[in-house]
Structures are given as structure tokens and as C-alpha cells.
Image (cartoon, rainbow, N blue to C red; front, side, top):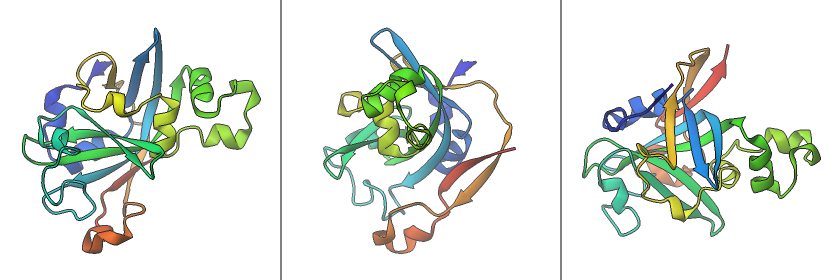
Length: 196
């Protein structure tokens, strides 16, 4: 297994978004290691994408997105849910990939407590299915918040590794919940894993 390098992120955003599918997101905190396989992503390219936070240019909020690739961009939506993105392409591009869904691998017991305040044995099958199958859900399960905004993803606190997993087909579709984005709502920039 190898940690993804800055060079991996410093490429076309759509390529990065598609190739993140199947990789493992790792979160280290409090002496524990939480890991999960990435199963859904969405690409956002500021220069041409009305759904992107960077479409209208750099702001204090989006500054990290215009910096070097391989950093975390974490923001709050609806005043209650965090979303985790990886910055892609070169400095000044304002591009990134939203991690939309993950499947737990290691320390799901801790994810259950983070997500529901309950031990794994005390949650329902439906709760288990929904533990990290959305951007806000996965951030809660992995304890990702604004504290992780601007983290270097090539370091040791939050990072992505490649274990060579390829046992799936890649599906491509329209992104979710961006009907306001005019023509950008029809871009096929959402990538999902379809296991074989």
C-alpha cells in the first residue's frame, strides 16, 4: 500500500476524481486509525463550473482551493454538515474533488460512535448501511471538521492510500443537488463504484 503523492493530485480533476474510486481514505486521531474505501466522488472545476465554490474567484473560504494540490478543503453546509474535498491541479486553478461516499474498513466501532453515539452492536442494519454513504455522514463518521481544513493530505493525519483494489466497474453520472448550476448540472462529473 502506498500513500498518494502530490503528483497524483496535480492532474486533471476528472482523472483524479475517477481514480480516487477504490482508494482508501485514512484518518488518524486519538491514537486510532480509521479507514474506509472511497466509493463515490464528484469533480468541481472552478473556471467552468457554476456548481463550484470557486466559480466566481478566490475568497477567504476557498483560498486553499487555489493553492497547491493535495490539500483538504472542508466546508460546512446547511450550518450543520461538513464536506471533505481534495484540492487538485496546479495553483490558481480552484479545482477539487468532493468525497461523497466511503465504505468502512477499519475501526467501524469508532465510526458508529462518532456517527450515532452508539456502539456498533446497538445500531440498526439501516444505520449501518447509512454510516458513511454521504459527504456529511462520512465526515461525522471520521470526525472530520473545519479543524481539518487545509491539512496536507501527503502527511500523516488525513490521507489516501492505494492498495491496488480494482474489483469494480466505474460508473459516471450527473452530480447531485446542484440544480441551480445551469448547464453545469448536466456535467457527468460524478463517479461511483459498481462492485463486480
